Amino acid sequence: MSSPSQSPVWHPFTQHALTPAMKRIVRTDGAYLVDEDGRAVLDAISSWWVITHRHRHPKIMAAIRSACDTFDQIIFAEYTHEPAEALAEGLIRLAPPGLAHVFYSDSGSTAVEVALKMALSTFHNRGIPRSRIVVMEGSYHGDTIGTMSAGERGVFNAAYGALLFDVATIPFPEPGREQETLDAFDRLCRGEAVAALLVEPLVLGAGGMRMYPPHVLSELQRIAVRHGTLMIVDEVMTGWGRTGTLFACEQAGITPDILCVSKGITGGALPLAATLCTPEIFEAHLSPELSRAFFHSSSYTANPIACAAALANLEVWRSEPVAARIAALEGMHRERLAPFRSDRRFANVRLTGTIAALDLDVSAPGYLSDVGPRLRAFFRERDLLIRPLGNVIYLMPPYCVTAGDLDRAYAAIGEAADMIAGTAP
Ligand SMILES: *Cc1c(COP(=O)(O)O)cnc(C)c1O
Image (cartoon, rainbow, N blue to C red; front, side, top):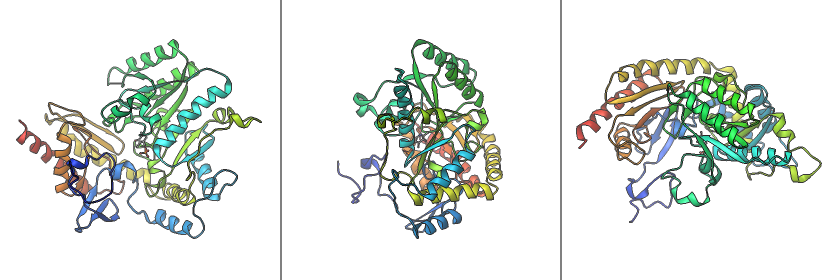
């Protein structure tokens, strides 16, 4: 099948045979993407969840410009640099108490990959034979072989199944059945020596914006501690205010052994990731023997310009009323979600912080149901960037979004349900 596009670019998560030629974006501004025809598209999903405050936040862009006068990439073994040092200190100050070391990488997938490796080498270096990883059903942790192994299996990774390693899975804590999740985890930990539990806190993102309450997270940690199992929390999506607090862990009052952050760490301006860990994890790798060092690196580890962008992001959190903006956004979502709760075309109307989601009640849910592409096209015609996960429609806008922007997005969601109902077989 020939590609409808003349471009040599191969886009992510894209079936090019089914995709019309893509519009070029020529500029970003606040909550908007401006395309080549001059149309302003509301970025209601923060460009895949990375843009927190707004596109091109002036302080972050200024910090990038200024860093360019002094730095490009610098080798991050043998040498260090001020942006990375200052950022590490800033991250430790903001993160749940007890995390003391920062390992840099460049994407969410690598932050989680690093976390899994850290957990395994901790046991390896201690001479304890533990390598079992436990994950939550429906999770997404990235697209490398390691993180796909930890994520939900399905059409996205079917081709790679032969290379994916086995993990144990606990059920998603459905409302009213949270204890089943906790019991399953406890049972697994009793049955074998589990190295680590890896979870997305409070919201499972790519798995369909499934939400669960903070007490499940704190109970999971209690069980992990009891069995000497490390807890890895993947805050790649939930971090930087998305769930209403800077980190979702705060709502559960927990400090995991390992915490992964990326996406909003630079406010979304540049790629950067960090894996934070406790002194115990770091010290398991301290030794006069090189063989116990942590063997992981990306060429662009701790890119100084990206670190400068992240430092500016921390400054935005310090100097601007970000928490108030997030609370206001949550309130605006709640108000606009209310009518959908009694609308029988929708189910599971839900909200955690800045993330609102609802399921379109269709007969064939799932990502590959053709509802997704039809909805996307419907929203695109209305200059709204909304990408449903199958029949799950969600909004995760930058924090600068206005009430008027949200009115437009929610009205379109209602109209989209009319469209699907009107043409359904
Ligand atoms: C996006 C995401 C990742 C992967 O991040 P990339 O930067 O795309 O590699 C990992 N975990 C979660 C929870 C995510 O949402």
